Amino acid sequence: MSQPVISVAGLSKRYYLTHQERSDTLRDTLSQGIRGLVRRFAPTGAVAPEGEEFWALRDVSFHVHPGDVVGIIGRNGAGKSTLLKILSRITEPTTGRVSIRGRVASLLEVGTGFHPELSGRDNIYLNGAILGMSRQEIRRKFDEIVAFAEVERFLDTQVKHYSSGMYVRLAFAVAAHLEPEILIVDEVLAVGDAQFQKKCLGKMGEVTRESGRTILFVSHNLDAVNTICNTGLLMEGGRIKAQGDIAEISAHYLAPALRHRSSFAHQSERPCIVQVELDEAALARRTLVVRIRFSSPFPLDTPTGGMVLASQEGRVLFGTNMRLRPPGETAPAREGECCLEVPNLPLQAGVYSISVWLGDSQRDFDSQADALSFALPIIPNSPPAGGAHINWPLDLACQWHLSAIRS
Image (tube, rainbow, N blue to C red):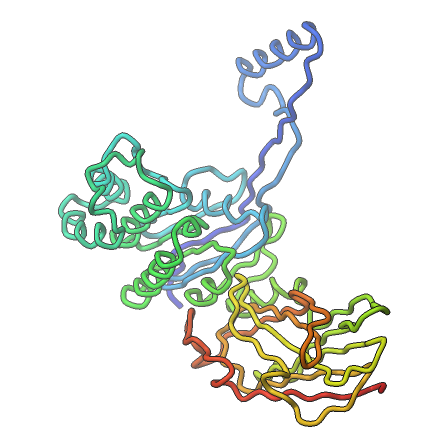
């Protein structure tokens, strides 16, 4: 195996959280001022830091090899951004060692490395120089950078007048086109519009395929992480909780939040949904089976279930109901189960939610938004990110079943 381009061993970072003291009297104010002067002029280490000790990272160790595209995921406060700042040499670790082989370009915050008084043109050359590029190298890539960033009209405008989206477009274009061996990208791509985010993800995939460059990518968008990354780190409480294949890491991260069964309070005065369940065994075979259990104070002549499936971002992908796909003759029922089966589910890897509703042939009685959620792992030949639109209900062979439990 090739030598790692990034080696991290026993990395820890400590901060001190200071709490503002309340100054009710002149005496309190003078005391705080004197303590501040003592700390300011005392020799380093002579006075203990003041405040609550907080470890943003604790004993983090991992290796990254050339060409790896590493997705770093975790909840807010897990230590992801602190880790990237240390790898980018923005801050120093408290303990531990970091070894990096290769030129690093970092995109951590909007406008990082830009001089607000300089124009976009000047900042391209400035950023390139910071990354170790010669003026000739920058000139060779200049037109590509400007075209990718879509800032031609504002190229000679001071960047302090740029919007946050323009900042990100130009900063990403410089970092991606000036060919660093290692590209570090934090959540900043969320600032850009959806079209530009897609363009950036495509560029990151392109640079890894064609030049084998290494990327560390932090994002809460698991669709994006699963699309471009081949390996992952799951962080929790400043530590690495798991590392390995990105599909397995994503599933590990999502498992506590997924809901394959939900129960709801029984409403005696109207028909209602009492339970919704996902068949996990069927899902493993890429078949979606959803069971909607209902109860009614009076017999429903034509119990009717419905389902809507949405992506993690809330984008509706498709929906169906028993009015569109009647299951055949149905008997009146006070209690029963509407079951939907969709084989060969044409969905990419990611997280999805299911909303359900209950009605009869003409009326709607009850609905439950985001009643279920599930994750699909990456499989060979699965649709790419932002895959083909499903022309529901023509493209999918689905079937509804109705079981009457109590008439």
